Length: 304
Image (cartoon, rainbow, N blue to C red):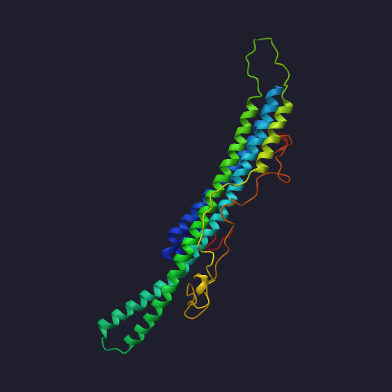
């Protein structure tokens, strides 16, 4: 069914349709990776308990908490990518709407050429030439609207994408650094047969590592160079705001003389990364024992 939707796309929007569809597969992969990471975290904690070694049990349980949070960050990243993908759809929908205007202009031009060849004295030629003038004027407006929305939304979409990528990376670094702190609490000094390991003396420090990780995630703020936009005054007809009251009405996707195409929702604000913080219970890392965890549209033409 998805292939059928792709075949029905206007020619000029097929390439972007394919990108949007491929991004959907990528998002599903990130979501799957997040679920697998959470499941692995639980398995690690269970294995640590089964070793019968108190030190390994405690450290593996705390590592499971951090690894599980890494999995949650994959899900947050996937949600942010879905927002970015939604902005790309606005470009694709505009491309699809402009196609009829291009096709109509080409059709009228072809009819004129055929008629001049077959019936050069036909009075219909004058009528068609007048219709061509109107079609060219409509297409001129449609093309301007397309380039306006394409430039604006391309910047907006990839601003969101890269902001989300930076957020994911920086939070992964936070969690990884605290994970390495946990490893330093595990004594790996060799013992000889018959000797017993001393009791684990760093339970409080291990608990503090999780507290520090929780605090660092809660305090994280994006520090991004802003991407300025000159499209903030664009009117609802996708033309500069200062001339919106006098500009010709939009003909994108509309028959002659009908309606205007309004801008779509702009998604999330640029440069914020969007989405949730990826922390549980009001911004806190889960501190419950990982052993209690499990691993855990018929869409329209413009959904995939």
